Length: 297
Ligand code: MG
Image 1 (cartoon, rainbow, N blue to C red):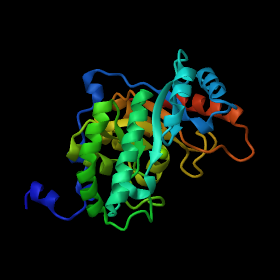
Image 2 (image 1 turned 135 degrees about the vertical axis):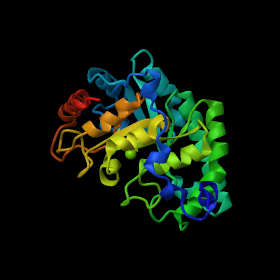
Image 3 (image 1 turned 180 degrees about the vertical axis):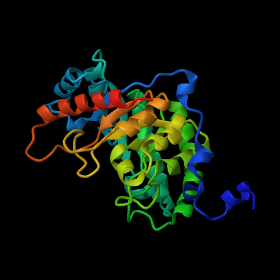
C-alpha cells in the first residue's frame, strides 16, 4: 500500500501522520525574528468597561485583546475604543456551535456553517487574526475521528475560501482528552491544514492543553510552523495565570522562536482564588517576558 492509498483508507488522518513527515520549513528560515505579542481574553483583564480594560492592557505592555463568540453587535464600539491605542483584536474565541458544523443533521450543519462564516466576517471587520474553531467537544458528535476527518474535508474548503475572500481565517484548536476525543495534539490539526492546503484554514496552540497532550512542546510548535496563528496561555494544573503555580513556558517559547512566530500569545485562564487580578495579571505578563528571554535557540 502506498502512502496515498493509505491516507484514503478509513484510518483517521489525524492519527497516522508522524511529526517528521509534517515538519514544514520554519518561518525563521525566511529571516523573520519571532516576537512576543502579549494579549488577553477580554474577561481576564481588570476594568469595568472595555475602555478601562484597553487602558490596562496598554499599561501592561500588551498589544492585543481577544473577544469571545461573534461580537457582531459590538464592532463599532470595539473599533472606536481601540483606535489609536496600539491594541489590536487578536482572535475571536468562537468554539464549536454545539458540534453543529459536523452534525449529520444537514439543517444544523448548514446553520453552523453560516454561523462561522458570520464570525469570520466580524473577525475580518475587526482586522483580527481569525476565528477559533473546535469541531466538537465530548458528547457533541457520535462520529469517529476518521468520519469527522471526512466531514471536515467536505465543509472546510468552502469555509476557508470564504475566510480568504473576506480577509480572515479559521483557527483549529486542539484540546486535551478531558474535553474532546477529536484533535488533541497540534500535529493532528497540522494534518488537516496540510491536507486542505487552504490559507483560510489554519490553527492555534494552547499551552494548557499542550502541557497535557504533547510530549515535546518545542517540536509541537515547530511542526505547526506556518499554520500556527494564535496561542493561548494558562497553567497546566488549574488553568490559572502564568506565575500563579509552577509551569514553564520556555520549551514552547523555544518552538515559537524557531518558527519566527509573529502572532499573539493570549491569556485564557482563571485567577487563583483569593488573589487580585489587578496585581496578578501584570505579574503574569512580566513572568512571560522573562520566560521568553530564557528560551534561547
Ligand atoms: Mg484555548
